[in-house]
Image (cartoon, rainbow, N blue to C red):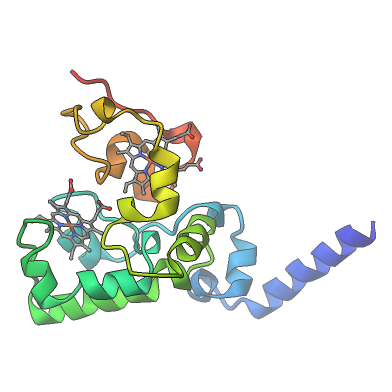
Amino acid sequence: MKKRLNIGALFAAALLLGSGPAAAEESFEGWLLNFQRTKEVKPVSNKRYQEECGSCHYAYPAGLLPAKSWEKLLTAEALKKHFGDNAELDAATLQSVRDYVLENSADKSWYKRSRKIARATAEGEAPLRITEVSYIKRVHRDIPEAKIKGNKNVKSLSYCDKCHMQADKGVFDDDTVRIPSQD
Ligand code: HEC
Ligand code: HEC
């Protein structure tokens, strides 16, 4: 009984502290209010990012990499040689995309999977790929290569949305995974 009362008080405090939906995304109080959604990763909420970074592959939620990784990926120089492609942006667009991503990176997020990614990347070199993060490597290690690289409907592990049906909502739980068949 005592425990329940305490949780009630916590929520009341969160309600008082929270100041509308905008604040709810960033603050600890907001995290409490939205605790159901925060099990996963915050979905992309920026139109420019969605358009510029979602044309060759699905637009990765910013909370899938720490800021130190995005800082390396999102420079004018780096984007000219982006995994063998040219993903150059004009200076103003790059600035706004970069600002958005850095504000929402894994190490700044309360979302549960982002916390895991932040922990997995806290030490050492910044990974340039989500698929190089130890936590992400581990959860996929039992999938045979034939179902990934050998599968023309997937191509590589980078195409999260081919298997994770709700990747665009930032949801990666095992109820929403389906590896496409090869034909
Ligand atoms: C011209 C096409 C193109 C555009 C535009 C593009 N990318 Fe990519 N991106 C790629 C390719 C190709 C890969 C490598 C895919 C693979 O290895 O199968 C990649 C990989 C990535 C990865 C690593 C994925 C992994 O394997 O974990 C990240 C992160 C990424 N891109 C972010 C971005 C961001 C942010 C933008 C917007 C600034 C962007 N990309 C725009 C082509 C593009
Ligand atoms: C070839 C299909 C495939 C691709 C592509 C893929 N995944 Fe997965 N993913 C899976 C499967 C299968 C599982 C294991 C589900 C289970 O545990 O039963 C999984 C598990 C996960 C989990 C753990 C889920 C949990 O319940 O804890 C996360 C997080 C995840 N994937 C993220 C990603 C991200 C991010 C990408 C893209 C960079 C990606 N995946 C690309 C198939 C894929």
